Image (cartoon, rainbow, N blue to C red; front, top):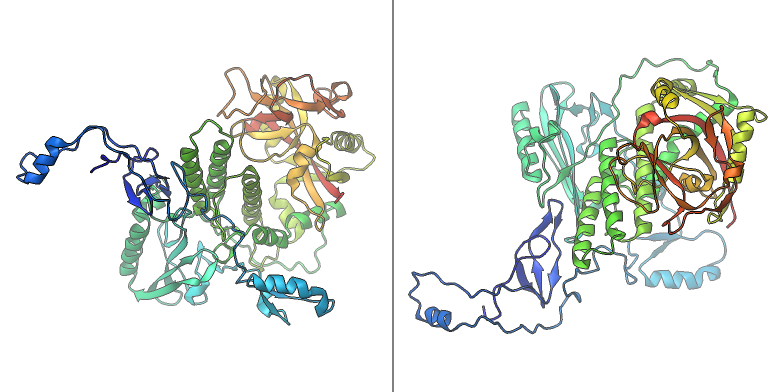
Length: 614
């Protein structure tokens, strides 16, 4: 009272309270995050204190009449936890140089004990435990294989996966996985809720499993037997308690609203489909060309997807292959785009910017459960997460085409048919192959120095229904080009399909390495129409009226005099990279964006080998 009434939080309008040498906000920034605003210099209201008219307290009445409009400033001791004045603490879920490696176990193989003595001493000081033998469980991937019955799968921790199934009542499937991540409070929790019905009988069980993502030592399970009606009632009660929403709101996919401090359901899909009767494939000979067989093996290699999940620290124990839906992954991309825009915004108030970044990070890690969530503050971190989502997207697509349960008896020919795309290997001496190879060899950007590219195969593509969709655009639009598909999905120019005219601009997003150096690239015919040209990234839902595409103008471009035409009217910008005439552009290389899939037709799939220089 001596120093004046506190104003509200400038970020979320919540109330401020004094704690540990500073004032902290106790409100919520959004439904996804507690506000982490702290300050030592809060805004105070200039108005005088008011007291109830009916008060008879003599001291208060005397104080009220004598109080001054100008209040003295409060001198605070140094904060006990962090140095913050109008800023957030910067230690939210970030790596520390002092972190111990207490859960790391290491076994040394090869060489003598003396060779590793110094390393062993340093690692033991950090908490590492050394072992003479490698335990059997060390090689386990941690990915759970689910056994699907009906349209869902019983969690193995219930012990009922062999004798029960998820209750289905009409359109309702009583199975949900909830997640909540809040970096300001350290929360990173999951909650699994299922009604399991006996395969033989009508008995039902409500199964619950909860804990911290990626840590099996924290949490627990509970299994309660009851009647079907009681189980449904209990399931709905628990769902409402954990999410703040009725179960029906989530089922209808339209009325669910994330509530502050509550869980959010993951949109999951077990890839359920009618499995045909097993065929005898023992003597069946493939009709595919050898090059195409190798391509199918590459596309449908389950170990590729398992390795991707391991690499990105995805919560594999609660996320079997293929569970996250396209919709869930897309929401993750949207959160990353928001973070990217904030990171690049130098005009935003630092305190507000930090709060919004934390909020978007919370949303991302709630939608995409991770073992080690953290505040995504840097552009390189954003790019790494985009890479992770692209891998998840590949897994989601592949899981709809291939069974990942180990019981799949389909031949490569069957898998090929599911692609609904005619894929034809080109002869290496054909005109199209020679043109594609020239395009690949000529257009390597000067800043991409870590690897060179070697063309191994080219496949002509004819996707089912795509020609009919594209033909009207091809006949009516100008500026048709053969362009490299694929760039980092940060939607810098809005949600569109991104292309490049320099091969290495797209090749860097194949994410190959020395151990697995072969990648796939896509060349598409793009009907650009009237082009909206820009020198810096500008987010938009679509280009201005009269424009059908956007082009980010780069400082380095393919030499125009070396462009060639394919099929008489399609420009192939296969010239060597040279400085452009564009001035004051923020972009190194050209980027082309269309916002309508009917403006694109896939033409060639390339199998490319990367030769790393280091």
